[in-house]
Image (cartoon, one colour):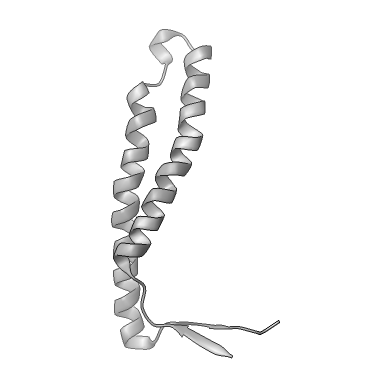
Length: 90
């Protein structure tokens, strides 16, 4: 059976993507920052603000980028139709 994605919700998808990106960056950046802090001289250490600031950066720009991508998809899908996929009952 063919199905078509007619519309993507910019706000809902933006929230999900932004929170996911922020959490993944926290999981990656906090341990890396602590690792670098322990093994580097003071002058080369990454800022602790990076460990806090980058997840916030990903949160804001992840939301904006995903919302924009959904909006563009909705415009294109209105002209040429949405993405089609097939499903199968198992």
